[in-house]
Length: 325
Image (cartoon, rainbow, N blue to C red):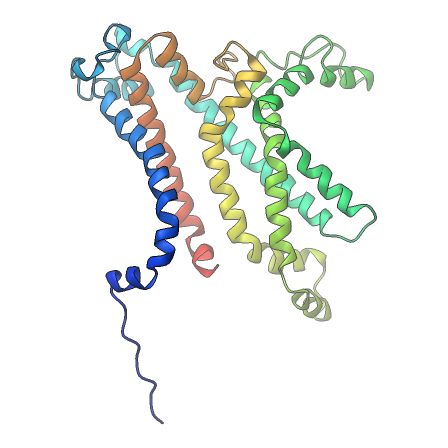
């Protein structure tokens, strides 16, 4: 039997020439993204090596070069090394980093879990299904800062909607302080989940709807129950979408909570005290309130590095399913 001739593998330059029209179309967007993202990153890296303060801000290119001084301060605080006055300025970042990790975990669990449940429900045939799908999208349409304002009123200790409902149902005897104290972080988590739930739900719903119904019918004929069909058919086939949502959740956990926190907790920096302080608001205060621009840049670079580590872990966890997709 004659073997089919092997196709010669195209070189990188040949593939570029073959798809030159596509590259021409995406070139303007690529250049714009490069300018918008790469230049600030490079500038931040450069500023993190300088002692840029309010007095040297206008001529920051001539600011004293301090090398890795600010990076050392941050890591000293994280590992509890150093008791001098300079390291004490970053002790708040340790608490903010811990809160950010808890915030990221719970927002991912809430968004993914509730999003999948809602997607499964909206995939069923029932009356007013179209209206239900539209209502699910409403939180996504609301601007982020409006979401923070809405939940600021919901979580008010006196007259807030949450306390009114809980008091009316006799679940609590006295109003809960949602915006201050240990409950503030979970109040922020709930607001963030409410904001991001529509997007996750629609993504899961789209993934579920493209699963061939023949697979479910064949599994039913083989005696599989609802849980077995969900576990062995639905979950494996929506894993690529789930992986993408986890990535979005990681990015949102590190950066996205800032806008909601600013409106919910007020103060211009989203500072909710030690219990709900996140990394981005903490870095913002160090940078703009104390005018430690070099330090703020170093802390931002470290935050970006932390996110890249988590993205690397994410890629290893979902690599096979993404390649299969």
